[in-house]
Image (cartoon, rainbow, N blue to C red; front, side, top):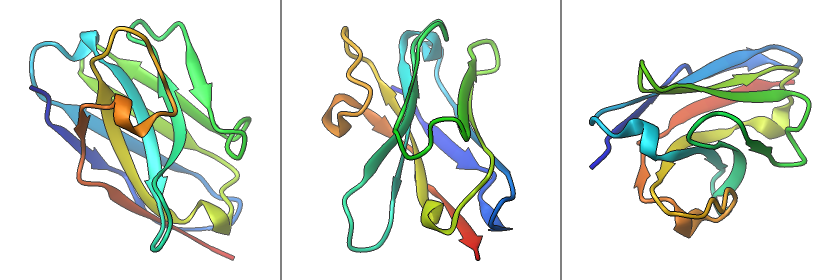
Length: 125
């Protein structure tokens, strides 16, 4: 069982930066592949970024590649999403998720077993 709590959302101007954090409970955090998704009202939740158990592999949606960076600290049981050069279209609720499966399917919502409650990110133009 893993519980996830996101933090770090807020209001920022276009071109600015935000750093989202996700704190996990439980003793088996390092066994989970981690991901970030986002959702806006009326739209489906979409993949943003994911990271393997040992941090060796990262995945990004094309829309955020080169601007966002995902990282994790297994000792601290945290996963972070550094978001730079933010755009108004990045406005969404951002969710942290944990995938306990054998094969990493980073952009598949159904692959993730646990989800946080979400944190709002608003980028003004």
